[in-house]
Image 1 (cartoon, rainbow, N blue to C red):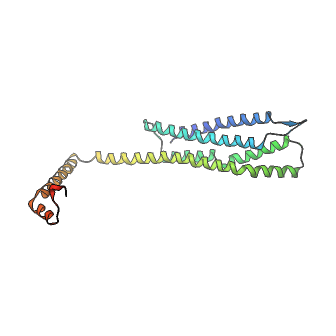
Image 2 (cartoon, rainbow, N blue to C red):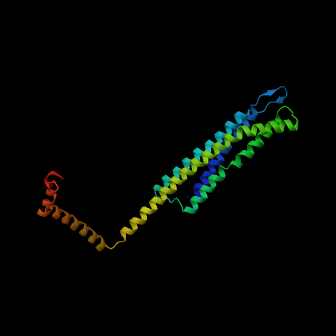
Image 3 (cartoon, rainbow, N blue to C red):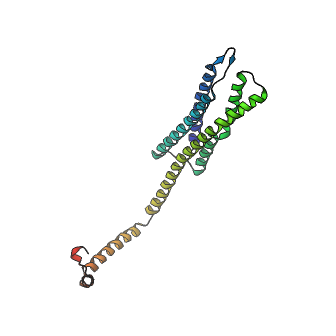
Length: 219
């Protein structure tokens, strides 16, 4: 992982935010009205936009991480463990609860301000009800998104660690003395010949026959 991946995740975040803002603006423009007073956008419609925003980021982040892995397989570097931690922190920051819940409440406050005038107490109760109703759904969506993206990130990290272990073993083997490798092959060959000789010996056959086994029947 590297700063390029972190930057691409931030770019995806910005693209999804722009799309969500356009949807919210359109929601206000098309909100129904009663006489001269606006009824404001539906809280359900607004929640759907928040959930699509989170889903957009989750899908985009996962796809970008997979793309980074493919580039790594093709020869590009995925970066150090410290850089991977930096990407993990970026994911947690971009999908942090507080980044969305505060804006949701601000949005619903704006909606309440454009509806039929209410007393401050009535408006506060209405906002609390809306906030409580839709907060849980958004929190759950954010939690799932973080878990799924970080899981994909951990797969890449595990793959990288496996590759590093393999390269380390291969390097260790490749630096062995040629004579050491030759002696290993010779010893293995001698061991095979010794086993074959023992099996072919009369004493070994007699021992097998004593226990009711026969070398000619595959034991």
